[in-house]
Image 1 (cartoon, one colour):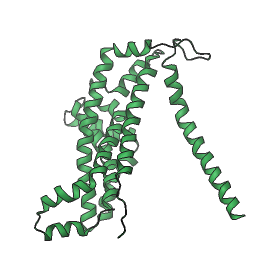
Image 2 (image 1 turned 90 degrees about the vertical axis):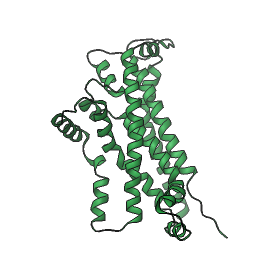
Image 3 (image 1 turned 120 degrees about the vertical axis):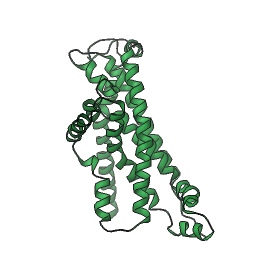
Image 4 (image 1 turned 45 degrees about the vertical axis):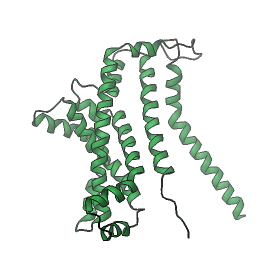
Length: 268
């Protein structure tokens, strides 16, 4: 009876998981399908297969400018966020101090704040210091948003590290910097690569904060909104497909690197 109940439970869980994936990805896949549809308006049955909307997006200089801005911001944000996330995670791993729980809570706080609130706060702050609408304003805002993701990934990896490894390196004559370079960083390398890809994907996709602080430096999500306003333009489906594939590729790479290179237990 128990085995039968377990089978039913597993079957229900699998069905629930499939339903969640269908609910999430059906609109995205539908948009991708319509990006190859010759008809201007989304309708069933579909028209003929075409790459016309991709050609329009490809030949639009504003789309290229937005793509360059998004990629530049995403790369800078990934590097800064991963560096900050590593420092934060290592501080948590290595040191014990008063109010450490508060330190971790503050480090993980930005993703819990509603994006519209964070966007308004960033806009007010940048306006006050005369930096509104600058490219580096988007970089700073996205770094604040993405650093906790990098910290969480790297912290999870460092928790798997034997704390005696550093002490052994020190006893063998290695300096603290040498130990960091040859022991800690190589051990955390899969998580660092994963954090780079993950934060790049988050920054590349982010719209609300970028829309408030970008000014004339429009990112891909911002340019999509501008194209959408006032008319129905199927090139949005083409641009959205590019964004989705780029983001999913980064997320999959992050997951594969972190999973496949995770430490394995050895037995002697």
